[in-house]
Length: 138
Image 1: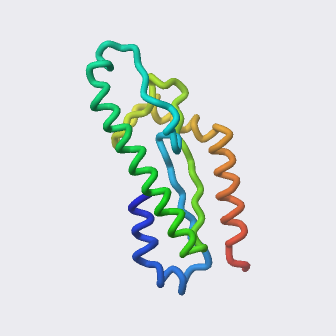
Image 2: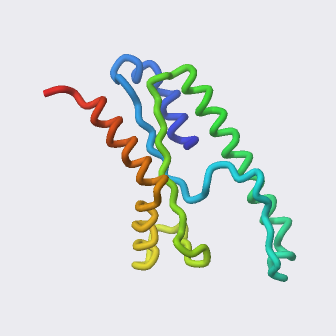
């Protein structure tokens, strides 16, 4: 999100001159927010590593908060910008797809299955409606 926002800010005047609207499609691997869901585990290994995991989790939340605040500010300045979010949610938490460039067949199937989630179906409808409404007339 941060890279996309920087791009939009950098090309602000060009976008205003040459675009009627800008659609930002965001694909997430974690739900947005989560400040009210603390990290909890009963695994003995997790108890030892909890301080590092909490630091990593809190850093992620802080970055997300900063990015969303930046998005809100940019949308106030650039009303042409619209964001639609797709979210990957694994069918089984212990089998979540890895964050690498190589995905196993199971991981590929799990990601494809996430497209059928109601929130992602709604995001797809929103994207299709947006594209249909902004398509140039022939």
